[in-house]
Structure formats: structure tokens, C-alpha cells
Image (tube, rainbow, N blue to C red; front, side, top):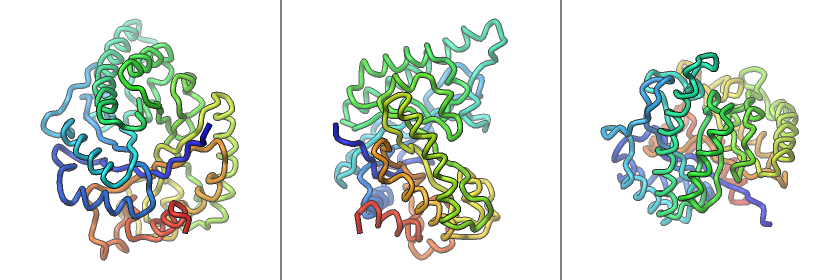
Length: 323
């Protein structure tokens, strides 16, 4: 069997209705292709009202539409990119989606779980049908939904429904440090995780020190692979170009941190060097590449996750293109 190895990037996040169908979006996709990327995770969200809501409505005023997704897929195809469609549910109350769930000790909680999973399954099946119609090469059934992950029977049932309408490989996106809580990784084809591991011990840490921190994580990921005999993909990974970012790669809140492209570059180079040649490792979907890129002259002051025009972008292009 040919090794799965994804040279990918997340594209589409933070977009609202209509954003995919612009010249800026088309230009962004072309520039992404220039990095040597071969895949995108086309990732978007809709909301449920709170982390304890049982219904996931479609927000017709905000969430990207099926026509938007179709346009993005067409643009990706035109650039020779493969697509993993990644629909996500966020909570409008501002709490992280990992907290979506219901108290176990509540006698009524099974009915709450059933109602939520019914709604979530309908949400997923809609996009799985779309992924099948559009020929998307992979489909992601969930992202960082930590409190739901103990519901093995319900997840198994949901995934079975998705397989009824989508014929390609499925991936689930766990969260770093919580991978062992997903007993049902055997139900998907690829193990995914958001690998925001804090490999920086201090702001401005070196590549060498980060490599040392990645090595035991690599051992852990290999054990996960051996347990389920599935490739492991970093469905999300990255950090901002800001001082201290490698100590908290998930961070997007500390906007006061000064610009530092070297720390971001060290994060990129360290994890690539540690994982690239592992035969069980399935590759990367880096977080992330904006639909509306900043002008190139602003790259050296941009403190976001984007790598366009930054040292990390050069490193990734060198690895992705073999140059």
C-alpha cells in the first residue's frame, strides 16, 4: 500500500458567506500552491448557540454556502490541489468546542446526547454528501470535540451514517494530549490531531531544543499508530510569528507579543525534521493560510499564523518542493 503523505495547509477558516468567491481568495489559493502544497483542508464553521445546545442550525447570514464551497473546490482543482473537506461546529457563547457536551451525572443526559448527535449527524451527512458530489479526496468528521469523545457508540453510529454517503477516507481531528481518549479511532481511516504541542521551553527557544521536545511526542504518536494500525496526520499544526509562540502554539489571543519569525521558523523546521521520514506518519495540514492574504510588504510585521513571506514559509517550501 502506498504511503499516505499529505503536504497540506488549512485554507478557508475565518471566512463568511461569499468570501470564497472573490479574486483575493483565488490569489490566495495560487500563492498557497507556490509553497509546494498538494492538499488543502477546506475548513469552515457554523454555530450552535451554547456548548450545551442540542441543535446545530445553519446560519444563513454568516456560514459559507454550498455554492461557496463548490467554488473553492473548483479553484483548488484548478491549482492541482486535493481537498479534505472539514466542517466544524463552534459555540456562539465563545466557549471552545471541546466543551460541547452534557454532564454525565445528569439522569437526563442520554436524551441530550441523543438529540445532539442526531443534529450533528445531520450536519455531517449534509457535507459528506457534498464532499462525495464534488470528489473531495478526504472528509473530516470532527475537530477537537473532547467532551463528546467518550460517546463511542454514538460516534460509531454517526461515522457509519457518513460512510453511507461518502466513499473516500475519513479522518477525525483530536486535540494534542487527548489522543488516547478516542477509543473509536478504529472507525476512521486516518488518525488526526491538532499538534499544538508546546515544544518551546522559553520565548525564542532554539530548533535544537524543540527537536528534543518533539522526540517523545513522536514516540507517543507511533504508539497510537501501532494501536490502531492507521497513519497519523497532524490535521492542525502551527504557531504564530510572535515571541513566545512555540511555548503556546495554539495561542491567538496575546496580540501584544512582538513579531518573531525565527521562533515560528524553528517550530516548523523542528517538527518537519522529526516526523518527515517516519513511515507511519501521514503528513501535515498547517494552520493556516488566509483567504485574504496581507500584502507581502506586511509579512515582517504580521504576527498571525500565516507564513506567507516569512522564514517559515521558505522552510516549508523547501521541504514541500524538495529544493
